[in-house]
Image 1 (cartoon, rainbow, N blue to C red):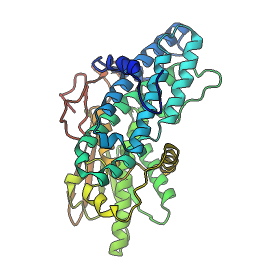
Image 2: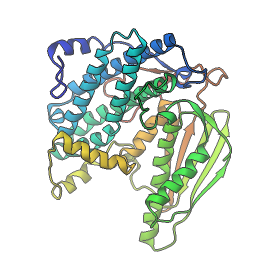
Image 3: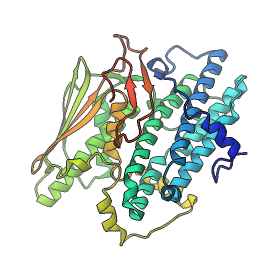
Image 4: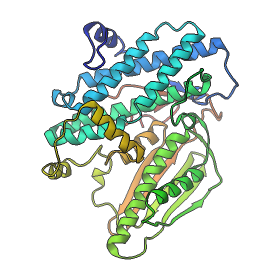
Length: 403
């Protein structure tokens, strides 16, 4: 048996190791398109279930490899152990569905996968908890743990794409419920302007005491074939950062906040969104793309913080509270936004003028191939060891090399 609370036993570890070198199949744009050709028949549902089960199982096995090669100090952290147990449990469940043969098997796998998705919605918060505590323990752990975080979050994007496509294409079985965000997790026409307007209202609702004007201009009527959940995450981090910093700068300077300006352009290479603020600029751009808080800041705050080593239940309760606020761990938002943009062949870059403000440039490519709306592919490969934190390990077929 596999001991989910403690890890893998020897026989399970052997099976997991057998998957470490297995090549992952590319996630095609046709698969991400969702249920665009009507309800699939039983044979197609069975094929989709087998493909999804196998590919997610391989991804889970390769993430378990990353856990097992973390430094001992990192694996001793309760948040890391909780994450590891979650992934052992998810892998074990996938092994139970190695023999999918009947429609009833597909229904059981659908429900089990939905439960796994719901259980793992707050893992980014747990990563943030772990990183902060580990750096307080030993600042030398930051490079190796940050590399682990990069691999982990990139793989998580691919896993969510596979799962969302499966949930959208295979009918919901009796008693099943789609995990939150699945409807926005498949390829579909997406309006950047509509997402931006909703994000502005969301910020105002969360921070009514910080009225920051936002001026959205340009091609506001355009749509692009993209995955709205991922585009929303990219835009949210950049726009909300600009609005928060503008509000803070206005409070300190004692003047009304300058408007955050957003311009949308749609050209041959896709959509470009420029978000500009006048919040005084960023003093050190080298720290913008690091995962988590800067080690020096964490160490300065360590003496005033309780060094809690919570049990899994307490950790999960904290993660649920953080999830409800829709805020990522401090220092995770912009690196994750850039990683997500690069996953799909786009990019996020920033230019700052100290004493004035910052421009963020977001490139959103059309997810198409040879002029067709669907039919291209995204291919995953292992990141070479020593790759810098935040560097994506995905290539887009027909693209211009590594992202």
